[in-house]
Image (cartoon, rainbow, N blue to C red; front, side):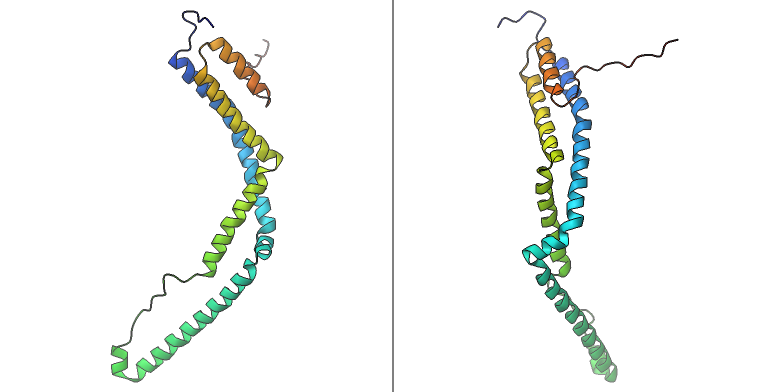
Length: 185
């Protein structure tokens, strides 16, 4: 392949093509990402309780909630008892401990719910990737990568423009910017 002098792609031309790829595909990708988020949220709204039940987490969390409630009740009873006993004697009152810190390695219901939420979201994302929107988003991202590769590997701008126009036609996006018609006077 012989290259004509002056037809090789200059750095500013490559940068122009890269910016144009981003400008053309970014709205499409953002649109699909919003659709995916909506799909994920809809899956999560329907299924977090079902997901918890399916994997057996609902029973574990319920038992932990009961245990935590029992612990809070026992803690309140202990506080009331020691406070009441401390008020009976000056020596008790002076030696009363003010704070008892919980152990750092306790697993709380909140911890379980956060973990369950993360897992449910990951599962929803996997399901959303299989939807038409998810497949279109994956395709658009692959298209963007392919277009960027074409720009980096091209040496002649006319060939590059034709390649990019053909590539973008697959998703209904035109490489060439068509100007709107001006109103007639």
